[in-house]
Amino acid sequence: MPATEYNPTVSRAFRQYLLDRGMSDNTVRSYLTAIRQYYDKYPCLSFENLRLYKVFLIEQYKPQTVNQRIRALNCYMEYRNFTGGKLKMIRIQRKTYLDKMVSQGDYEYLKRRLKEDGQTSWFFLIRVLADTGIRVSELTRLQVADVRRGYRDLYSKGNKLRRIYFPRVLMREMNRWLDDEKRTEGAVFLNRFSAPITPGGIRFQLKAFALRYGLDPDLVHPHAFRHLFAKSFIDKSGDLSLLADLLGHENIETTRIYLQKSHCEQQQIIDQVIQW
Image 1 (cartoon, helix red, strand yellow):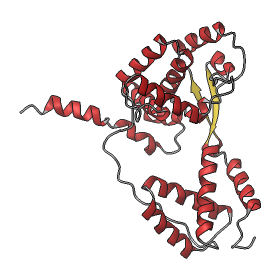
Image 2 (cartoon, rainbow, N blue to C red; image 1 turned 180 degrees about the horizontal axis):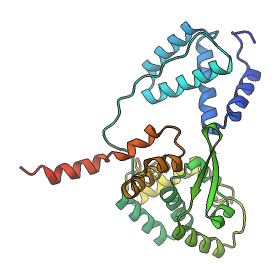
Image 3 (cartoon, helix red, strand yellow; image 1 turned 90 degrees about the vertical axis):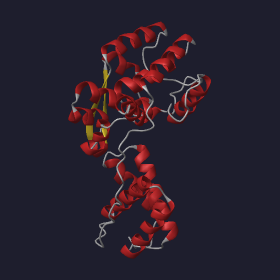
Image 4 (spheres, one colour; image 1 turned 180 degrees about the vertical axis):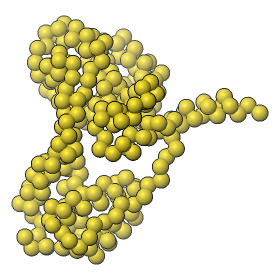
């Protein structure tokens, strides 16, 4: 394949390469976006062009996005058997606190309000997010059979098997709800058209509930409940390795952030300690 070529055929082949490696649909889309952006700017794959592209990324994007696109390019170079070298990631300053995490108090308040308003499906949806640590893209694929069984097996990056467990209390309550709804099969969480709800639909509705109930909409999003699960789990069990497995993290260093305090917790500690 000539180095200057990047066309729909190549794109489809690279997409299949990524899927064969067990990458999620979201990761595949983001990798393809990075490759298309690179070829929109540069006609061929060369280390000099790659270096210039990295400079462009650093000037235009946040560090996390820069590294995500560098990972995409390095993966593409591996796919192409490119021997001109790999791009190095940029160093990201580690935060000393957790942010974008809904508090336990706000979570309990949101559950209560949803239950009072008869929003049973959404009541259970946020409980599944907060009680299992599941990703929103994975939650949309949950089936009634998974709830009946008490767990769902998922394949993470690198084709690694991971199991999502339903706590017994949650499992019993959801089974009663599904029985009342006479639901015996299919996706657990549906939209108003009785089709499986989408990640975008979940994000939109959670923001709407936050505004309705006087909560900070920036803190009421699917990943915030995954953060809450992780922080609660590590506070109560201390098992960082198991948490990494439950969350599907390839690198335990990614999980280590949950050993840190949230900025609200840090403020509370400061207020309690500094009284002179």
